[in-house]
Length: 461
Image: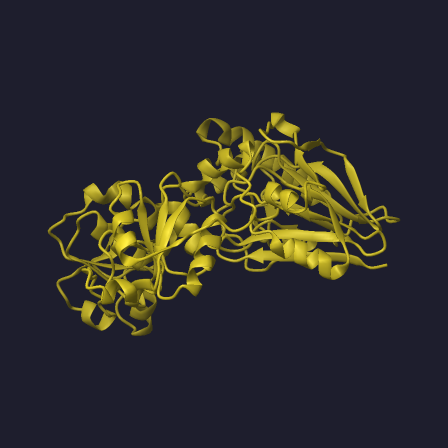
């Protein structure tokens, strides 16, 4: 008999889900699954396990819950267990769980503990070997992270103070009272906006956090409130939307959403519709060299999920343009993870088919840092506030990419802007948004601030 415990990372959204069980009983559970749920089914099959339960630590805001999708893929047999603490309600079939509820999978036992703060209903799961009195681990969801804690401000200003106080109590009265050897497995790693300054490691221990986590070292409530307010990252625009979708119950797609290939003629007619949003997933240099007018460039990297969530409208079907057809399914998967399920289609043959059909192409100049330095271009920095504060190109102006569309009226359309970020990815997203909005004097900076710094060019702070 062997206990099985696997952490499964969804890159880009930096989300961790868990498959855990016991080969003796042959039973297993999945905690906080993502919607592309084949990985849990395949891993359970490989380990000889049957998934009997699917758990959620809370109503997620940053990614589309895959709990209903996974249960459906397994013919509805696993129990879908969600917290009904804090008055939580759901518009789908479920089994409510509360503080103290226990679930056994062979030698492994999960104990539900109510850990409010990030959300009112949030629960964590203590992990025990069946005969032991002390837990060996805890699945902390979004209440406790490596070097950090969950943010308490996602339900709006009227709930933030109440949730901050609850988070403080959860941290001090639950986590800090656990044995120091307990291992902590959170729902997110570095790069997630579900907590401030989340550390790079994928797991931690209570002992390590006691020694290094500044948030747990604050034992005064008012000081804790001040620190959480100061460190809170911007709230991505898709968070409030996904919170509602996950409470209502995401649509079960029965697999990857469909995105049908179109000829250039069909695609041209498709994107002429007002309700279709055009997304080009190529690299920034390829995109800048020639793209279909009206495109947003969100390159096919794991971080596509995050910036699609910030910039796209979930109610409008997405039309995709790629370099090659093999990229489409990966793009659809990454969009699905943040709640996009409506696809108008993709351009068969990629951008080459559009080009060889003789249809027009727009361009965004790519300005290397050597040309930017000493030029008359106005650098436009679209990084986060803390990145800007840490150092920026002299003479630059600053508008964070996540709020750029709302702040475009503050920009002078006659100015020649050179858009930069840290490496160029976000710069191309921003430049494409500006171009689509009618800014024609826009260029993007490959390498961006990283390349500027590598050349030892002057930096302002």
